[in-house]
Image 1 (cartoon, rainbow, N blue to C red):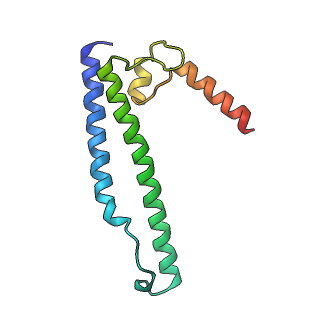
Image 2: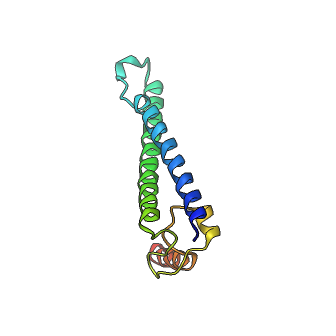
Length: 121
């Protein structure tokens, strides 16, 4: 992969990580616990709890994605970006454009998914 592509991916990942950090900071206040006595009835309380649960799940997902992004930026810096962690082959640029945080080539990912299906079924 050439330096121009690496810079493009690094810039894209850096921008996305900044967006996630802003989102995480913005939702900190939204997920603080509401005192049940502040809610007029059980329906409002249940709705509030469901909203909090959804916000926490979204924050968890964003945290996981942020960790993957930071790991991928480190791979760019180390010269390991775009290399399949399982087989060592290059990951196709189209796959990286679709999912820059991927660490498996399409062949290894499909194999992993087939194995998961076998064990899940």
